[in-house]
Amino acid sequence: MRSHGTRIGSHSPAAVAVLLAAFGAGCTAEPASPAAERDTLVFASSADATTLDPHNTTDTQSDQVIWMVYNALIRYDPEMNIVGDLAESWEMSEDELTWTFHLREGVRFHDGSPFTAESVKRNFDRVLDPGQGHKRLSLFEAIERVEVVDPRTVRIITKFPFGAFEPTMAHVSAAIVNPEVADRYGSDFGLTPEATSGTGPYKVVSWRKDQEIVLERNDDYWGEPGRLARIVYRPIPEAASRVIALESADVDVITHIPPRDVARLDGLPGIQVLKGMSIGAQMFRFNCVRGPLADPRVRLAIAYAVDRRAIVDNLVAGLAVPSTGPLTPIMRGRADLGEFPHDPDKARALLADAGYPEGFETTISTTPRYNMGVELAEALAAQLRDVGITARIEVLEWGAMRQFWGGIRPEDNPQEIFIMGAGASSADADWGLRPVYMTTPTGTNENNYGYYSNAEFDDLVMRAMQEADRTERETLYQRAQEIVYLEDPPGIWLYDNFYVVGARSNVQDITTSPLGVVTFEAASFVPES
Image (cartoon, rainbow, N blue to C red; front, side, top):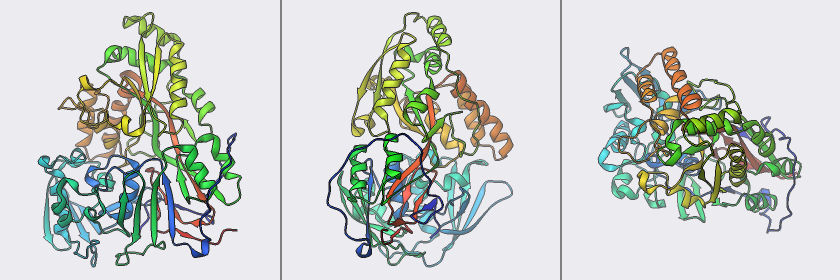
């Protein structure tokens, strides 16, 4: 199977030490069985998947399971180049509107039914049907139609030259589902094992919500078969508990490791810690239509009030670097606009100009689901206090936080400043900017979670979306990023994250990706030294 990230393991050169000050806690748990007897890997995620329907996924926890169960036509390789997956080859027409894909032979879905060009057509017909209400409809809205040429050849015709077509087709939501199963279960597809069917190296055999998802090897897989018989995804929301579970060998792999634990874990026998640059950034978003935050001058004042480098140095040293734009360096079309200056005097002047010379009161909503989520909110509140803004911190569980992120009207959304990760899972500026900051016609917040609206920005990203020339696209995206980062911010970009994985040293060939997912299609156990 073609991997979609960097494989890391006990013998991998990607294993690197993370140099941080550290402290930790002891732990007790029943250790796992000896490595030689093991064919089941346990991965502790920070939250359960919400859906295993690619057309509706919007979170990393779902994505990394989906990539084990499905394939797409094309995907990213370890160097973030786009390579074939279910498609052996593909080409674009001279008018840049038609993409022809030549499909692999002998591919079957988990129920044994064949994968054909008709499967591809029915997938895109499904996600593009507005009546079905799939969350990723806007990702594929550049597609005009899909045509079957023969069982192994399919054409995708776009409405205009779409510069982000290949990154979009490499997105997790372009993974191909079994259309028969999808039709059978309708809106319930991807919510239970029997309602989940792809062509991937593993298949879902059980799912106990908020307890575990169990995958078993697909012995009829068309590519290189998985080495593990089973993979168990076990949500452990509390970071400290995940660390304890890894130390005690109750689980084999974890992510979202608190910075204070990284160096300590790396020094322990039987554990490896690995990291790499990711597409992900950490930010706080504004509710741009609520109270003082509706004024761009207030939002800009808050941006100037924040000392990002102090936050990085004191909270996530060695695991992140201050952001230099709204997109991370891995992203296509990204503009390097430099670190945003920390200027409290300018912040106070902007507040006074907006009519708040004495500041105002607001709320910062956060969740422990994000690494250092509470500590980041506390640091932000302290820095805002210095310019006269009093912020009350509201700590929410992940489920309570997510209820405000999707389909909510402004009058029903009390959040004002709220924590959020940032990063486009297509690794392209189109998806990193368009859905999350472009004006939402419905007035709700399906992807534009903070109701941001800027007419010049909207025009730029729509023009860039319909531009195939890479130089012209980058010019348009440069200006669009200047608007949201330097002039009229929808949020505060703090830092660009490294992707950090902790694993038992007897686990090898884990696959990580700058897209922020970890998968196990090639993973196996070796005797622990």
